[in-house]
Image (cartoon, rainbow, N blue to C red; front, top):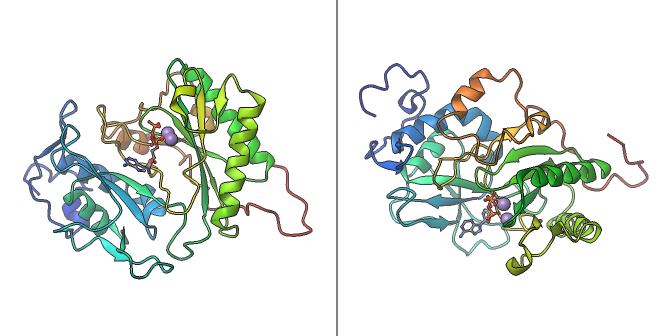
Length: 308
Ligand code: ATP
Ligand code: MN
Ligand code: MN
């Protein structure tokens, strides 16, 4: 790490033993965000991102020469992978290539050292690969859709999730849409979770066919919002809360409070540059109760579903 970062108390060198090579390499040219800048960003958000990435198989978007260069979406190790990145096998496929993960800040900064700009975890953990501990409903606006319509979609998804006894948390995607996320106690298996989320997407598309679609046929998407439930199957991934996006603007997928949902906060409003200030100014973490709010997908047999 170069001189000049001494006055930043969270600069990675104080928190990690991982050395950055080429710290001045530019990852987001328009914003001038460098590799070292990204490491500093990740150090700032470590305690917020950790619960969502530690102990999970991760897919990575790697951009060795920045967002304008070649991009690799990787689920497995590459030549020269940083040694602080964990590798572990899928218990149901022990002979296949190991998956990647992080245990600690060294692992996270190891990802930065390996030019990882986006982090996409699974919806289950290595403690129980077969039982997801969250649902994610990915709202993808097609051309011609205005932001207030995406807001309405998120509110409707929230209401439907809550009617099913789940809590619903919100994040921007850092790209074009919103993600509504429900923490689960890991009881139901992937098949049940996928069926539930497909049911939710299908019922929205059936109720308002002029507004929503639940299948990815792009030709049908103009003027519609895709309720993309396919993040909810074994092996599927979705961008992590607080992961930046390898797109112009250096947007970050950002947890927000439902009360913040407004035309002023678009999908890429929060960025690598303004998140640290936002976190410092927040009086309450909008996802502070995320894990505490976990509920089973199906209520225990005989129990009445609690209305929230
Ligand atoms: P946006 O708001 O722009 O839709 P998003 O993160 O929701 O942002 P999507 O295109 O809706 O983006 O979803 C892409 C998802 O597909 C990601 O969450 C990612 O985990 C997964 N994925 C699978 N293969 C790839 C790939 N080759 N490149 C990028 N993402 C991939
Ligand atoms: Mn999306
Ligand atoms: Mn999608």
